[in-house]
Image (cartoon, rainbow, N blue to C red; front, side, top):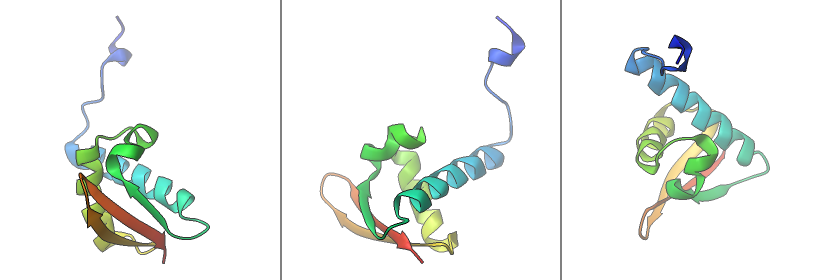
Length: 86
């Protein structure tokens, strides 16, 4: 097996940034035509993140993403998020 097959050993801050950017780009694309509602467990495969990672990143995006309005909408079995372009 070659050395390139091993996962990257970058600092976790860099990993979090790339995950946050990936999620933000996904949400910007999906909410382009208006608001969207979702649960992390239903988009986790699309963004290659766990529902737990999505939840943590959504809290960050709520405060930092100026291009999006992020709102914790409801909780029924899992958090439902409401996202729309700012």
